[in-house]
Length: 64
Image (cartoon, rainbow, N blue to C red; front, side):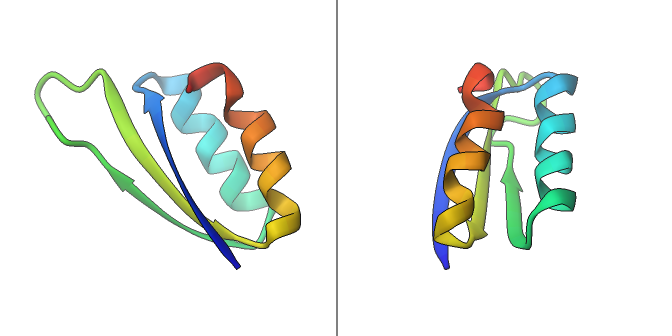
């Protein structure tokens, strides 16, 4: 298992893609929003199999 952390733009599409990733591959995830009132970005941490990292990065590429 590999753990990766990404800082993503905070918008509904990015959250939808994160939820899609959670449903398509076996993984554990965490979300962290540092400023709840003026959030422009959020942290998405995922622990998944090494062979799934490429899939995750392709799905998140437009939001990084």
